[in-house]
Length: 227
View: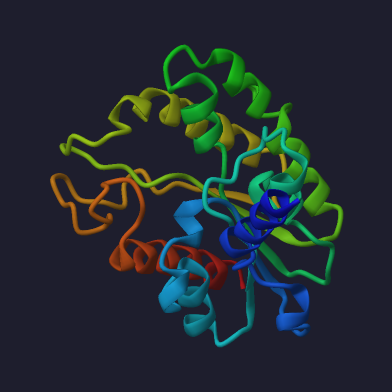
């Protein structure tokens, strides 16, 4: 009996850092996703913190490290490792999210990924888990900004081989956004200068504080442009 209890405690400590809706009931901006958005939250310098500071509005950040769309375990899935479980209905003006990278990395090793890509989003951008989730969010009236992933141009990294699959995911998400004026795909593939490692942590995968700030500023610029 002790081991299951310890496992639940570990899950709470690992995933319980995402915000509850009661933390800021007046918030109208919601952030969902994986480690690209969850990174640096412990020091209050995650992407959501950048957005909150720049716009002067409360932001609820429910992103979870290692989240993906296809996650079969019920407890950790409900805790946010299944990306769609992070969403809660509310009077949102904006929902900002990313996702799909962990499905490609863990689902097909970023190798032959046609099957996983098609499950995430079909080549025409109309079908798959991501367009279905985005459509569900849009039913509330919220505008959606879907973020692409950072790259590491001219730097060898542990996930360098994911580049082609990531590029194809970006292409399909761009197509998805064309079908709804309330959806924006915001790429991050051009954000990092060639050979510059300062936008990432030492693992060359997750964004550094500088990287989170750059992502946040790009999101803020898009929101201000729309307003």
